[in-house]
Length: 446
Image (cartoon, rainbow, N blue to C red; front, side, top):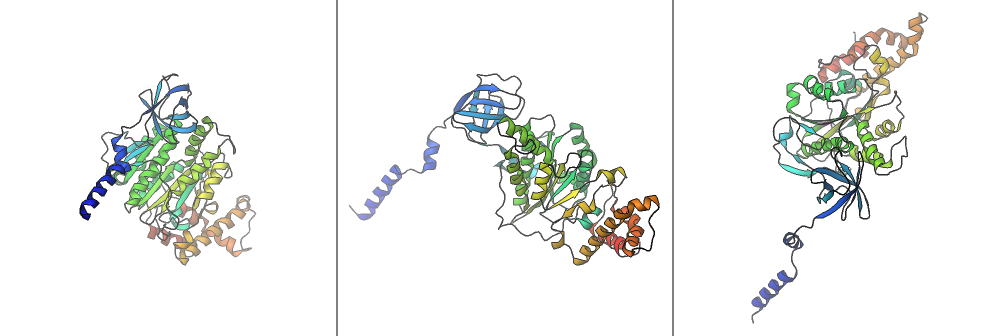
């Protein structure tokens, strides 16, 4: 027998004996795992289920999808995507064998989705790919540096709290402090190529109002809105923020500069708390289980600049009674690249947006704006602080001019500074115009 013939026989035998594992998988029928409901709660279903993994999807009673949030031996804890009304013990639970997936594509632009990525406006979605709804943060060494300014069209922010492309910023305020209004102003005025907006735990009325009043027709065309109202199950409310982030990652991977806005991160944390406590986690910090803080850091780290494209994240944070040191506000502030504080006092005085300039900071501003603007911003902050120091004396008529030149200048310029920082919802200020006005109220004639 010739050598080539021997080689052919050996090759044929090798192919028969050492099959490609992927071909073997295809040739074997898929195994379906079933269990039965053991307990039904308002937000949790306990089931016997073999082969379940954390994050797997299940189908309960052939109609209700749920996600595995805990596994203990042959028992699984399931968080349903919808109401558990009508379920009873003994009904079938089927393990679907994959995690939560969402459809992605340019056809999402201009559409409104629920927290699970399903359209709630009219028409089918035109998509090009499907991804697992559980992305991860980019390698820190592969991230590009934040070097470019992202004008938001808000004078108070563009002047002294300048935002960079890929920065992550929090807007902190008590209920009714104007967070949603400020987010609407940013959405309609910013220069981002794509906007992804997540409304989490909002009232249904506010969703419609935001869509109709806060977004211009031009802004709607480049916006994807993800909505999960306050009546939805906690898993969907939590997933809404994750879904919005996955959508933002899709457009970022295409080289786009994406603006991701979440209202609010606090409701994301509260939804995660409901799920964690239902699963039996201990409450360690003001009623929040440890998993909430892990989810917060994982979520926020997915935003920012990447090797290609960027996600600029703006997250609203609801604080209780102006307490900036409560656990969620304190944790989020430590994770972000800047924070904007909205003041009830300024709102009560009719100053909108009610941004407390001296309590707010942009941690990347000094590396993206010229020295001249840094000096102007520093002087504006100093004059605001000087005026606040003597404000009570001015009101009671006890302040005498001539005692301190800097304070006298602050008092003289204060009305012009107030007017500069004030802006109506339909008013747009180009970045260049904002810088001219900033110079005028700090160093120039006004």
